[in-house]
Image 1 (spheres, one colour):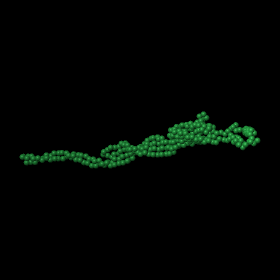
Image 2: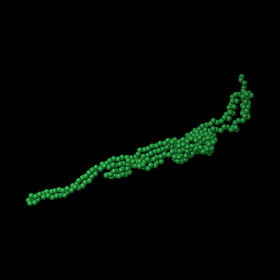
Image 3: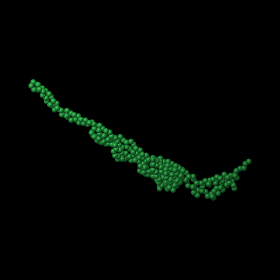
Image 4: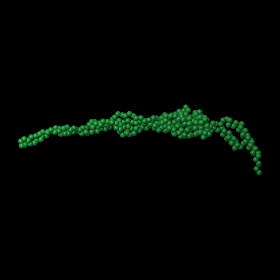
Length: 299
């Protein structure tokens, strides 16, 4: 008894289909975090089961994963004031001062008058008097100004992000270094001498802001295999716990996940036995023969 090619082809294709393996599936997801960390640790509870379930897979079907944690380090300054440096001369000028004194000079004034018999004689009287005498000159003095300066330091330390999943750990640090210096403030009077007749010294102080920062992006990548994934994804919650610790100050921006999964091949109990295939072929052949016998002949 001979089967048609169509029936044989259908049966063989159906049998081979039950023996085929599933194709690996790659899934990816980005999770926005936006958490500010300052010398502290946090745990990201990533729902890995939800990503797998979108492809009809479970945690036991996970084959590999790459996790990338992104952070951004901004400047966070610690401020301190440096001690003032030594005074240095910033200027001088010569000042002219008129000086002198006054003393009283004695003078004698003689007064004459007529005297004697009938006024034919001349008599005199001497009178003593005093008059001022001014003595003056010009003195020259040098006035000098001095300045002391200091920096107000604003320092930012290097930040470090450490990411760990199970026993897998990796770290990254920021590396963009910047230095800037502001202008000095207006001079502030600190004191000095105020002699009119003498050399004067006047003292001032200034300060400026100095910034030293270390900023930049932080990126840590971890690779996990099937054994790690299946043991680290919680069986009850489906979460994969990702621990992030901060040394310094930065913003935890996002988490990128790329995962590969594969459904297991069918077990032997799912594959038809050879005897079952033969029985199916025989049944189909008998059914086809019966249909041919019942088919009425054409007139």
